[in-house]
Length: 184
Length: 211
Image 1: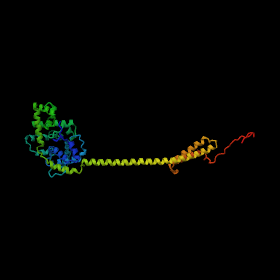
Image 2: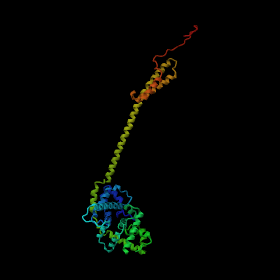
Image 3: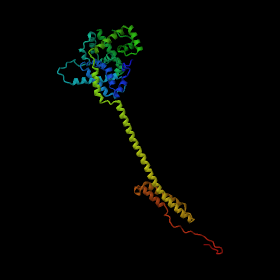
Image 4: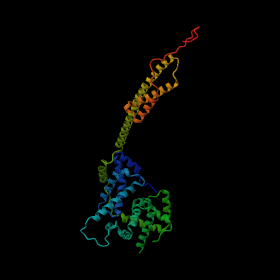
């Protein structure tokens, strides 16, 4: 596996973090440039479309404020994903608590991929989106992290809070279900 | 669409898609995909899925995000230099406090031991002097006092040394006072300053007697 935490300048994320902690703001800029787009894709794969910039920004702010808590056990990007995922879930919970003027119908139960309906990505992409709606929430999440973000099973397990083996099983079950839907 | 029987290769297809394989592994997987129709179909599906999941995501403004992140965290994250300096200062302050305490303890101990030493010197010297005087006095009588007297004198001197070391009589506990009284009771009377009469026997030739 290649090291995704090393940029073109050869400096690792940990080295950039150390530079930032010494007061070098260029290191912060480099870290943001290195991971912001991946965080945006991650948010997009979870259905966040409108407030991606805010979400990415809040993720970095929270991460930089708690860098002392980053032990380097996982990659910096996985740690950022974990923070962003938590922010996303908090926002969804807050939205659910907020009274909606529109009556919620049976079957409208929000999934993390409802916003994908608004995407226009061609017929094939539309079929994939429909196929993913048939997956369980955990299967969807694992599948999206593996396919859209290219995370390893180990990283997915850390992020989702499961085991590496369970993440692998979820991925393969999801892939089988998507294939079956597309073949029908 | 069927699954490739090589589960290990299928497992690595997303890594191939995201270029997360090292050169050797990549060559291996690419060679397999080149000869496996199922894996080619699966990797095409993976590409479509990735597009579907990320299609609506626009580019984020990295410069704006960086500005906000730096502005909002600069005040909360101390720079390493400051952190090291404050750590050094803190460490130096700790050492100064520790050194002060150590100095006080050592200095106090030395002063205390000197005071005790001088007190015990005084209390020991006095009885020794009296013993010496008494010995000189005793030696003039030629009849040496029994050794018991000398022992009791030593005992008295040690009691008096304890008294001096402990400070004043008021500082002694009840048990100490009892022990001191017991020692004093065991002592012989204070020796008289006057020498005992010396009996000199003189024999006078021809008198048939003595004295």
